Image 1 (cartoon, helix red, strand yellow):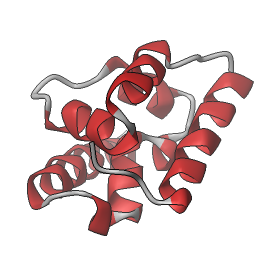
Image 2 (tube, helix red, strand yellow):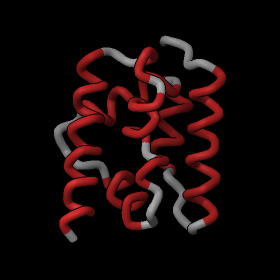
Image 3 (cartoon, one colour):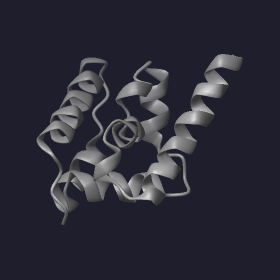
Image 4 (cartoon, one colour):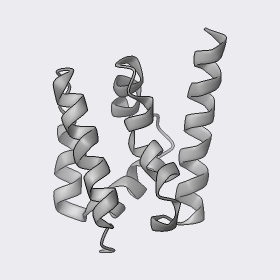
Length: 101
């Protein structure tokens, strides 16, 4: 299990606080984070071919910049190239759709 930097951990804690303030509690991610560690949990989710419900929910709550994909974008050295590409693709798609809406 690769250890996340204190900055990444702080960012993720902020994501959870912001989501909770809008009445969303990402329990599946929180459980995965405890089980696998922050970096591994994020990697598993961003590499999944399925659009994660948490991403969709945070986007609807106008917290796109606080998704785990945004964490990968913000802390690229903590993730491998595949994680970075998957996260970038999902964010690019969402931002484009938001601009076109």
